[in-house]
Image (cartoon, rainbow, N blue to C red; front, top):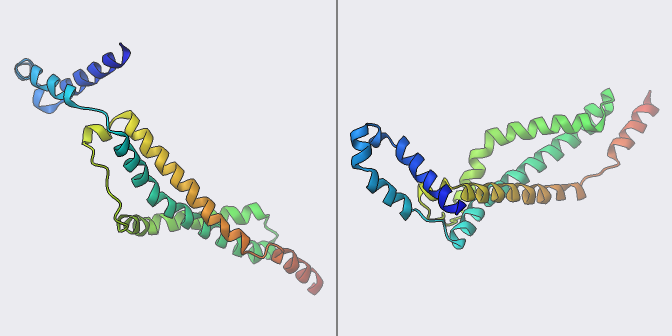
Length: 178
């Protein structure tokens, strides 16, 4: 079947490229051992995939929250000050807010990662080979993407607290003063 062919190809490829087996004498002498080791590699269990998903998602929730709070706060501040003074469009202020958010992510990403690690989440008990499987990488990516989306949605709740008409009032006030 196709699954068996893929599995055998994976084993042969990893066998050929393994540093210990580069010379032809080692290649033939160790062929049986390497193929048996490949057959022993098994797909992670459903519980391991669940742990991998959660372990990938939780730090990204923090990143999403931080990203949105900084972007919205800075964008709103820029919109209500420089935007009013120089006539920037709201999207320009949002773009500048995103710059601040990106820089904050670079500077404080390690703090968020450390905080998430301090929560005591169990790391999925997976071998390096299991983690390198395409399905494992997809689960980890899906977990990270889901975490960012959830974090961004939580961070967007800041929009309920903002005075969205402040910019218009400031514009009218500055027009009246002139």
